[in-house]
Image 1 (cartoon, one colour):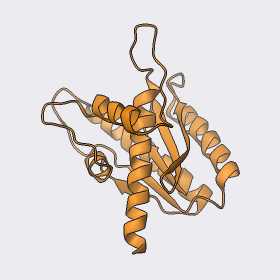
Image 2 (cartoon, rainbow, N blue to C red):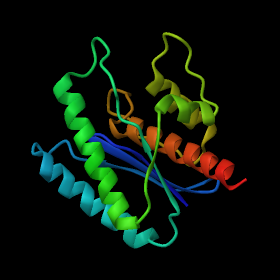
Image 3 (tube, rainbow, N blue to C red):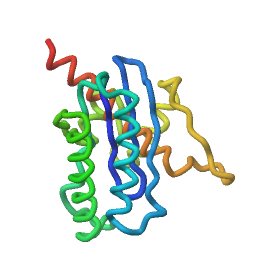
Length: 175
């Protein structure tokens, strides 16, 4: 089984796949915690739950690589720094709990491995969401009263792409 994570300081998506089959897909919402360490404690408790359920079954962990550079109109230096710290801490938590060194995948590489094409000028997150809704029967989302996907939908989708891409990488490594 492969555990895929899309780590964020607001909502962390996680997916567990067993081969092609999605075993579990969810999100850990840390938006209500303002303190960095409270967010970490919450995610740690969730990682512990996953470990209790799947401790000897998970054989690989893949994490979406955090943003490495600035893009105008996107995250500030402070945001990137906090995200990198959080990514590092959560990476350590899963390593410490499962004894498996996580592998990191860039979002673009993971999407490509899964056959998801994002055209130039198109936003990746809605494209990924639509692809999964059209192609992955187990992927179901909820909508707000205004008809928009609930905030955790994108994180769950990204973690599923990471987990599925991780499975593909594991198959390639085994052959």
